[in-house]
Image (cartoon, rainbow, N blue to C red; front, side):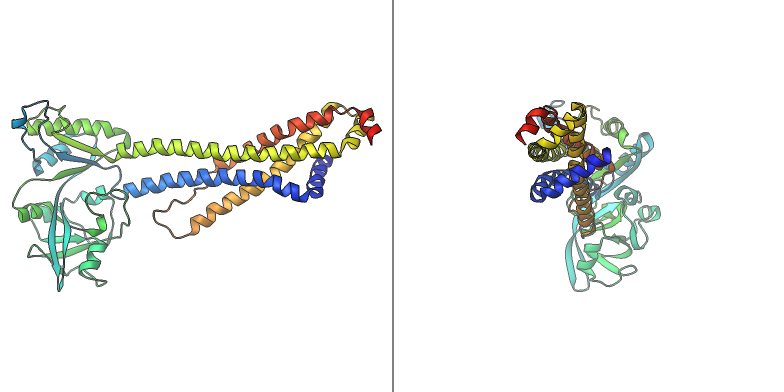
Length: 408
């Protein structure tokens, strides 16, 4: 009986090909839009997160400020400065810090041969490699001995290398920075376009030992401390420990947020997470609404089918079929139609995700295939089929056999 009902549903679709195609278009498009829209929303979230994290994974930037206005008279709001000893104290005293590195920032004139550029030159420590999550295309990174002995060595980004050296190999060659020769000991792999940055992208920078950078500017100050918690959930603990340790060394109040100014990428990404959760929820509602609108077309098609098959329904009821049998018949027929459209829409949505994912991209959101979303689309399709079939099924079951046969 079930197979016969399914065959009858397929016959209905065949008899009303144009109507069936137009009706199923809503189901196909609704199912495909659920998969594509939600997958695109998740892909946009992943792309944004990856683009933001290209500056470094879960970084916490700690900067010196000035004594807070509410803690001291305005005339005594002295500017504060970090030193290497402050960074060492943070590494030694903060339990939740995985890595911490001093950073000195300067735009300096760099020259190689006839090419000269104003370049973002950064004094860093060896820990910066792990903090910035960079790898080397060739050569080596800055070592502890480089920092200890103030060596004039440099690690160069891909864009800075292209501007100064062109496509030629750079490791072992020399570049002049502020008129002083530096040996290029390492070349960073390309990081790519960053959605977050501190002044410039990593590819545009030249890194030298932090002690050498302090010698060039003739000051022992450190512009900022770059750190990372051992785990993302320790973000608040790291900020609290950093303020406590650094405030004690700077002789300011631990509660003075202006004195020790902290920018956490984790906090910024958490805000983005909330926005994208709302956005993805909106896309789910939009796709499901489209699917239910398609269900209205299926219901209209089945109502027409009921009117055309009144004699058949009346004959079934006259020879002993129960109204419940007729209800089940039309519900199954409606489910078959919606499931055919749902499977076609699911195939279309998955194909769209795969095709878009194969296109070359860097920061363009690519839909992500999520099994739970595909399952959700099918479940909603079944629900739409049931709801679309209720009215036609009850109308069919309410037909008076004698009246139907007499009219025919």
